Image (cartoon, rainbow, N blue to C red; front, side, top):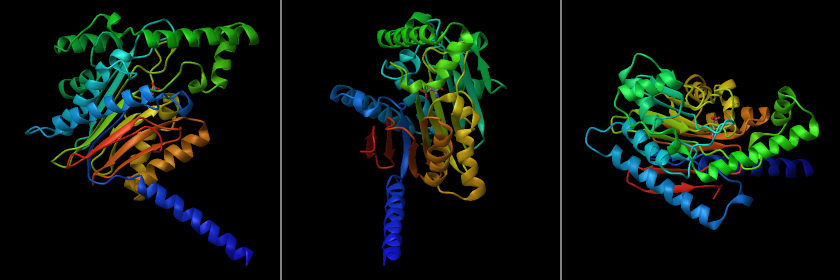
Length: 352
Ligand code: ASP
């Protein structure tokens, strides 16, 4: 009897889990975005909640409007929504980018087209107002995929993109965030010893996310256009307090961004080093293409199983070629939203 009760319980758990995963897939989606992992529940206030939701909805609508213009492609929608989020101080991208250890802002972005597998990225730029537009220019107006630092800035200027004084990226909130992290780092090194090697080890022991003032606020978008083509893009200031020209996963095709018409479009946010090492975006696409997994099963396999087991925090938004949208994350929440073909908007922060 107990055995059958146990089996029954297992069945209920299995069915509940399967239903929950299935329920989270939204059908008929043509455009979706994320605004990073954001704050934990304890840090969230009604004001921030309201502001984040409003900003996500505006970006979604900007992308949707771009998508519905005559002859528009998914790339137009991805670029329009990401530009909007880059211009807002709310997100860790463009204007609201986090600071490096040296008090600079070094931005990364990438974009990819699922029909052709063409892609473009920029990394470590400090003067390009909208890095996503620079990434698209790399894809469409150069023979290359990834341009970095001064070269990428020169390329953007040459192509007539808007160039700003690096001060444009200075925001008080992000500056305070860096100061908190520097103080914490100093405390740790005083307690545990001196020297760079020791300090690095100490910081590495504590997941970045749990250091004071830290949050992942990268932005990304995925689109399915009228021609049935998928596109994806991601833009970020990287990780606060980063050093030595550190580049994360966001401009790395296959790690933070990927789009393949035969599977899905993906944009990621989280601890970039893990996303690079685990080739997260491409791994999800590979599971769909070679193992026939559905978009939710493939992304949960990588994000909730592999990455979680490895200690890599973060998430992805995925949109497959049939318009099935699924966000997968191994943190408390992820700022995200999607819009269906008929214009119905859904915005979420936690599992609500
Ligand atoms: N993935 C980004 C990076 O590692 C950070 C983020 O998602 O907020 O650069």
